[in-house]
Length: 509
Image (cartoon, rainbow, N blue to C red):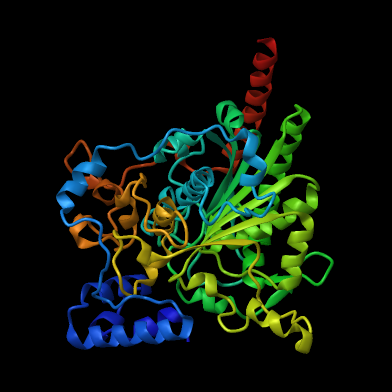
């Protein structure tokens, strides 16, 4: 039985039936926790899962070691300080920060320069959620709400010093219950594809700061740890020419295409590799040192590994790293060995209480390798790759305790915990600057004393505007924000011209 199904069956009939989806049911479950019978059931469920998975979740109503007794003074203190620290020049240390030594001696304690870089890449992954059109009543449901030239500006990420060069679209040849968002309308921008991420590249200033031209690929994941993770545990499929195998569903999303679709005449794999190839060849042709950093949360973390594998095969010697958040296992031990041989460096950021990184293979996983002398290498066993930075919800005084799978898996929860992490034995960092309010964007994880509403991130008036007649209507998208395959091609041409002109000016000066 899938985890979300287990949760669903603990809800009263009034909440579990009808048109309420599983995510809504979880929220409803949290909202009626005062009901005695339901509270006992939820407690038993949390305790049983804690025992099974060794999550060490605190009791539902407990909270410990709060740093603030006067939360009003906390508001004054935090609201009047910047959310970021000044950027450091890290050019001399970029190889180590990019994983050349597998982040040895940089994770515990966490090096402050590495912390900033992890948050930066996490924000790139978060952008794929913040800009995604989840509105099933919109004809553009499943697309990005902004064109690539406005994406970082709209989301406040221009400060990171990167420019988006390409959007990635994906489909799947197999049926998936959750990841593909579709409009309820008949006339829609696409019935087959979703916006799945983007490619970006560092600008001149950021390139000087970090010591190389950094190409970033950010993959969109899924918000909720629902039952499709359970569905993904069925088949391992060969990849490459060796014994490496990866999960069939992940590979389908990465490689599926259909000539009769508008956005997936080429697969996500082909789209991203074409763009990365163009950028690598261009900047290496200018004599620059180039790196490829691939990031993603949840499903996006799985796609990031597949992307890294393909990139490393196609670009021997290119520095390829993955920074993933809450990502599931993707392949078997042979897949991990091939990634290691190819020089791919992977940093997996996981939250101890999050269930998703334990899937697929909650029971049969890399822990069985201790029996290899007896059983031999088991090709069907899922295995994590790379180095791990493990975070703990209980380390933060700002987060609620109790069983909250949606909150545990939220990328904003991850970024909050990274910002506050010093070491495995240290308390939450007092100098953490990232805005705590962001945690409750799409969940209910912050303590009530902070008075931050749950799931507050949404368009004003849920996207409606008042027109000149005083009627509330859905606005039309700006023409440049409407997804268009033709627009993709036009942008590719303008980008090539812009890069050529920038180098002419650079050399002229």
